[in-house]
Image 1 (cartoon, rainbow, N blue to C red):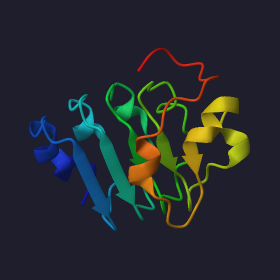
Image 2 (image 1 turned 45 degrees about the horizontal axis):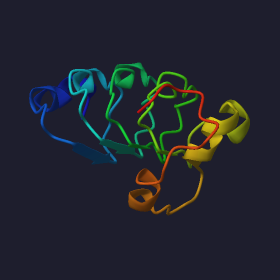
Image 3 (image 1 turned 90 degrees about the vertical axis):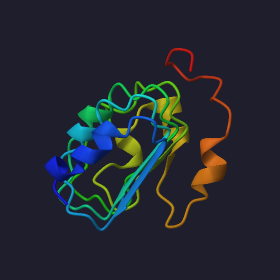
Image 4 (image 1 turned 30 degrees about the vertical axis):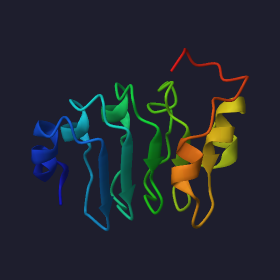
Length: 131
């Protein structure tokens, strides 16, 4: 599925959770309008690289990018104050690419318990604004 084929998701603004596994997604722009989305999982999408459409996802708690090897820049998602877990195994983002306290929200585990991690409290040194 190409990003332009995700158009139905832009109309589903009340949908809190989106999970795509093995889809040929390269563009998350249709998710831009759903600022209340709490969970976005795009796994095994080797052409996905741009996370900027998620920049305004104010309610996002979990971002699962496992197997998205072209993702090399996490900076568009890092300012999201509600974000509690980012799954990064199989991406081009390593621990050294994530600033200090925000690294505690990232996991490179093969099978992380994302439900548990998404509900954990904020790190005391989190430099982002209130969630």
